[in-house]
Amino acid sequence: MAETETFWRSTKRLASAIASGILSMTLGVGAMIALITTKFSWLGILLMLIGVIVGISSFIIVGMAHARVKVPLDKRTITPEIQATARAHQQDNTSSFTITLVAGVALCIISLFPLILQAVWQVTDFNSLSVAAFVWIVGSGIFAIIYGSVIYTGYTRIAQTDIFYAIADTDERALNELKQRNPKAHLFLYQVYWPLIIIAYFISSFIFGLWSVSWLIFPIAGILFSTIRHYILLVPKN
Image (cartoon, rainbow, N blue to C red; front, side, top):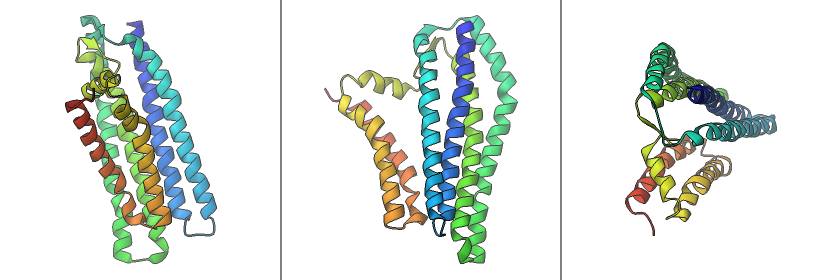
C-alpha cells in the first residue's frame, strides 16, 4: 500500500508537469504568433523558445522521476485490498475528473470564437491576435483535460487490473518488447519522428508563411504515427 500511495503521488506530480508543460508551450507559441507581425517579433520568438524549453524540461524531469517510481512495480500483483482502496479513490475523484473534463472541452469549443469573430469582422490588424487567442484558450482546455485525466487514470490502473504494468498501453508494451528485435524502427518512432514533425512545422510556418494551415501537420502526424506503430506491431523486423 505504501508503494501504491507513492505511485499515486508521483502520478499527481506527472499530471501537473504534463499539463503545465503543454500550457507553457501553447502560451509561448501564442505569444510568438501575436507578436510576429510587430516590431517585437524577437520577443515573441524568445517567449516561444522559453515556453518550449520549460515545457520539454518538465516532461523530462518529472517523467524520469515517475519512471523511477513505477518501473520497480512492473508485473507486480495487485491485492484485492489495494484494488478496493483504488476504487474508493477513483469514486472520490470522479467529480473532479468530470469538472476538469467538461471545463477542458468547453474551453476548446470557446477557443473557436476568436477565429469566428475575426472571420466575421474581417479586422486585418487582429488576424495574428485571434490565432494567438485560439492557441492560448486551447492550451488552457488541454491543461484541464490532461490534469484531470492523468490523475483519474492513475487510480483506474490499480482498480481495474490484477497485475500492474509500468507501461499501461498494450501496444506500447508490445513495442517495448520489440525494441530488441527492431531497434531502428523504435529509435525512429520515439526519438526522430516528432522532432522532424516540429522542424517541418517551423519551416512551413516561418519560411513559407503557411500559418493558417501548418498546424494541420500535427493531427496528420499523429495519424501517421499510429499507422506506422500498428504496422511495426504486425510486421516486426527480425
